[in-house]
Length: 213
Image (cartoon, rainbow, N blue to C red; front, side):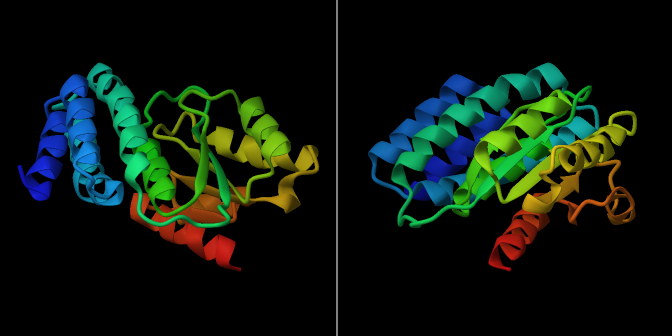
């Protein structure tokens, strides 16, 4: 099987919601000596984006996303074994989906792409108590704190994170980035966030711009 066919196999396993097939395909790909970045960029990422679109259309449901999400994390760990080239220093990003919100497919894609682009990522997961964002910032000193919300009812928690970082004396030590379906650039500016990203690609580009300054 060619490298391209193996990447297609990885992609299809995600779309079929088959975590066992996914991790098996990832292991075979790595054992054949291929670069993990290609499989993540051309297989996992587009498949996850396609699943996100299907979820928005009501053709895929949350339990399915959660099932394959765990498989994707396992597959990425396998694929990261064969990442060509190493960066001496890695900037750290703390990222999570805010409390009350269990939708994390977009956040997962952002976290994956950040790792591929050389960032260290602490992924707090979904439905994250706001205090955990503060604790992770205090303990790890990230360059960026990113929060995601997929519902208008949970969006105000992003503003609360801004306030809590300020109260803890941490706000001027990090840059904050927000994103998600109900979030806009105008809202990001209103709550005092440093950056807004409309999608995963923009989130990574924005993170790169932040750490380059």
